[in-house]
Image 1 (cartoon, rainbow, N blue to C red):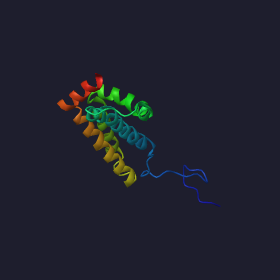
Image 2 (image 1 turned 180 degrees about the vertical axis):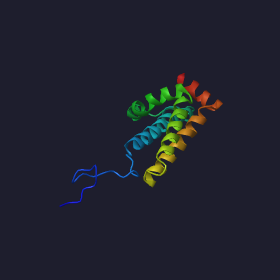
Image 3 (image 1 turned 135 degrees about the vertical axis):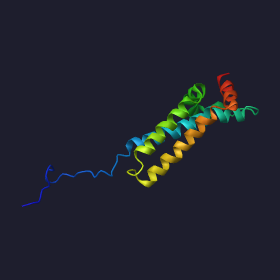
Image 4 (image 1 turned 30 degrees about the vertical axis):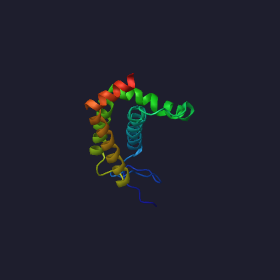
Length: 136
């Protein structure tokens, strides 16, 4: 006869309370890093590149569609997306502080810091100048 604890079926596994699903954290980190990369690719790089002649169009069509179009809208929205993603990142960090694997937690800290830096930079006058350059 097998020893079966109350409330569990034989052969089933029960998750311990210290385990947490890391899928939502991975998704959040991906979205945060994508937002920072899109902002840099659509706003900062063209602003810094502006005094020079642009490279041939065929070299930046795919990056332009993958990063430039979302980055254009992120730039026009100002600091709202960056600060919102930073607040969500801090909330995820607080909620999964002890239950998340250390590596995933460090990734979340790093991506939250980057997106917070983007959000705070978007509040500066230089970011307003860049947004006007992008909108033009």
